[in-house]
Image (cartoon, rainbow, N blue to C red; front, side, top):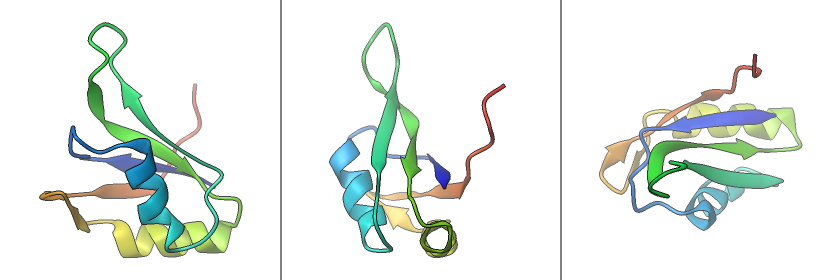
Length: 81
């Protein structure tokens, strides 16, 4: 399951995401998207979890969860066009 994570702190790291979602199950990958020009975080990222049930549980628990002073927006990622 591919999960979108929005409203991330600009200080958050890939390891932070992996640790946060790792509490709900196995994490295949966690990546924060960076701006191509500046290299700074764009404030969102994606987490891949192999088990859909664990992914749904993580979405339910973490949507609206406050992380580093910001309420996260967490939902199932939409497929790329």
